[in-house]
Length: 214
Ligand code: AMP
Image (cartoon, rainbow, N blue to C red; front, side, top):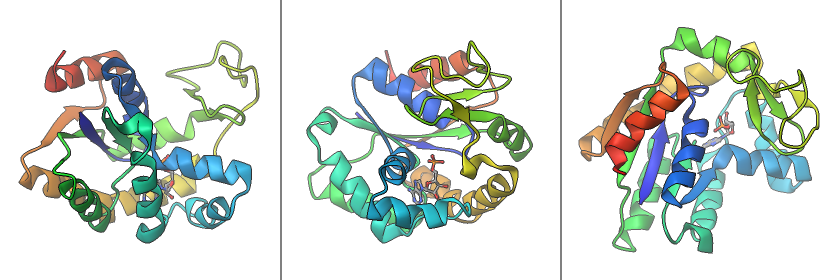
């Protein structure tokens, strides 16, 4: 099974993608996580990606597509995958489509997690991420057991640079200008399913499972 998660930054698609990956035994592939890992490790790719990410801009298609195609060619993706944060532009979607078509394959579902803009800002600026393991929390909705400390590894939680309010506003306008077009792209293919992302995390997941099947 191959799934794409669509939705504004902060719509909760990362959380849902992880739950989907676990339930269906498929890989969770997040281009944002790949970039952040490279930034942490100080690679050339990380340095380049950071200049865009810190401004709320998209990393160029050419670089992003190369990284994604490399990632989905790995062994753990053989059984399928859920893409979280990719594609974000029509050219990215076209390259992915073409690469899959060459293997007689295709995406099964594009799940659009719908959340209005006014809910997004509060969600994202309240987000906290672990500097060490990358686990994410929310100061109101998913608080860690101890304030500022990661439940999973005990290290410090921070507000990511790209979750700051000014960056979030920029990311939202980039989403509306570039990524929202993908809703029409996947609607035309007949594989788009839209779910209400303002519901509780577990209810959103139940609705996704109804679409994907038990
Ligand atoms: P995310 O964690 O998915 O919200 O991604 C964080 C940031 O990484 C985005 O704001 C972009 O700067 C960059 N990024 C992640 N995925 C992509 C993509 N598919 N295309 C371009 N930039 C991306």
